[in-house]
Amino acid sequence: MSYVAITGVGSCLPKRQVTNDDLVARGVDTSDDWIRDRSGIGARHIVSEGESTLTLAVGAGRMALANAGVAPEDIGVVIVATSTQEYAGFPSTACLVQHELGIGSVPAFDMAAACTGFNYALTTAHHFITGGPAKHALVIAADALSSIINWADRGTCVLFGDGAGAVVLSASDSPGILSEQLYSDGSLGDILKVDQGEPRETFEGTHDALAPYVFMEGRKVFKVAVESIVKSVTHCLLDAGITADDLTHVVFHQANQRIMSVVGDKLNIAPEKLAMTIEKYGNTSAASIPITLDDLNKQGALKAGDLVLMVGFGGGFTWATTLVKWTKS
Ligand code: COA
Image 1 (cartoon, rainbow, N blue to C red):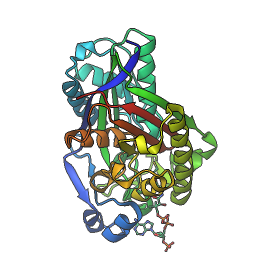
Image 2: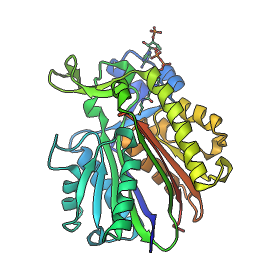
Image 3: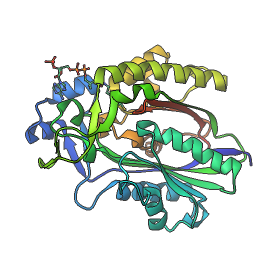
Image 4: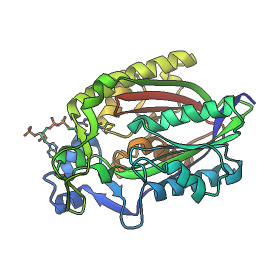
């Protein structure tokens, strides 16, 4: 069994939904029209009392295990891609998930690649299965970016939401993961970063002088995202020996509907193949790809043999493309 395939998928969103109009009511100097027009976002979910990166990660992980029909004790590695770890430093969120889900004493660690984290974690888990004793891996992407947003900055606060998505990867007799392209360019680190600044305004309206938060040069990020995705997807399709016409679903990182549409046009991907959850969830960072994959799965849109392209990009700057054949029926 030298191949690796996705055998389960799940997701978890915070219970509190915040619409664009809720943001206006909260005092953000914006409008539903502006946000929808510039990003395609209508609402996002934000953690509240009793919810955190960990609770979202556990919820998504539990659902993916159930969907795969894999018992916790059969998981051989746990990876959590996140930029908002439960604790700053340690223990890792992955270790806490391992304990909460009753997984054995297997390797568990977090992975920091911002919104590209899910693709990075998938590739890492893939190698754990092909190169080691693990038969199944639990890959979770979980972020509560609302906790590192400055809610006084209308240029960023309207874009992000919280959530988690997860997949189980398993050793397989037939190919699941077909191609993986991972990239980084640290010279672009400044265009999207978490740094110290003026006291951060929390969603609740208090101020925290020591808290770092997201800084973004939106226009530069837009341009770099489009250029890097086009190159990465082109390379991935060449590597797999297929064309955009062969793809069944394309799951872009849900950062901006306009980015997805522009890139889709440049790559000649039919618009109906673009999976979109941005309108209801906003940009959930690393979690957006598995959340959208789970959305497709719940709609019954994923069929055995489908070719699914998953494309991440974000802080670092990092970007990545993963092509999988859906093997679940
Ligand atoms: N509501 C209303 N007006 C806003 C606003 C908001 N939430 N945020 C910014 N504006 C204003 C600006 O102040 C500016 O006003 P001015 O013309 O009077 O100076 C105007 O809107 C245009 O701002 P600009 O930043 O140039 O808008 P834009 O068309 O580039 O759209 C983004 C802004 C952030 C939506 C867009 O650049 C973007 O999506 N970039 C990529 C971001 C991304 O994907 N990040 C995550 C990557 S993982």
